[in-house]
Image 1: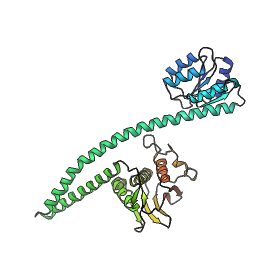
Image 2: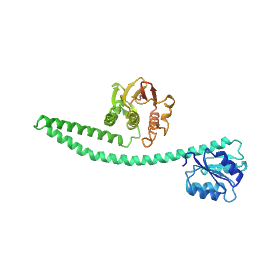
Image 3: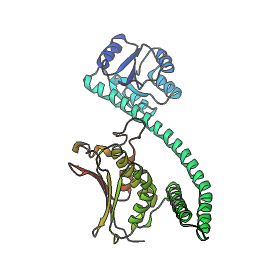
Length: 361
């Protein structure tokens, strides 16, 4: 798919065909076909974003061409061009898969361009959706493999802990005892990480449960702490121990936290100045609040809302899908909450999550 969007114009009248080509020329990569059969041949050879299709043609009707194109490849968006007398036929074409139609002669060239642009945008979004589905299927397979590996590692790690504890109970010199203590501590840390990964990877519950937000934060930090410290990122927790429990989906809230922490990690990892991730909780009569602040680069004020839109990302190609924050916003919205970002000079970037307090049912 070309960067300008590829459009195929199909009309048996040379004048109409060329006028449409001239209107779209420059903004799109435009091809033309003088008949329905020629259009079908071209669609077999090349993938178009939009096919602009005249309804009345001598060899085969536009409706028949529409049906054959959709049978071969449902992905091209098809726009019908019709005279007033064929308006009902154009409406029928919408039921067969066309996304829009326009009457000729055109009253407004800009309207024609706008309808074609809408089709190109629809095709682009559909393409991204297909890519996302493929990525999710791949991630699902990787996640299943990771879960199986974690289960396999759990047994030998438990063995290391057991044997090290047994040896620590025996008589040995201080050097060996210190080494055994380190082995035991590191094995326990591995065991803790494995438990958190398995907890995060398990199939999410459909419903909400009575949860402690601080517990979710602590277990999420346990999951991410090692990677953050490898990049010298300091973690500061200020969790109000009186924060009440509320009804929420544990895994979904943890997913939101992981998404925000991952973004903060990426933003800070290469900077030379001090790198700090600060997480704070507090509450009032109605809501629980979670603040996740990092000392990374500022986000421009005009981008603070855009960052939650699907596919928006500042990461380099291959480092993210641009879906983490949009998914996070959807999850928080489904919890009747709110998520937003603040970014001020000297304060870095801060994400605020508000969750309503619901008593146990």
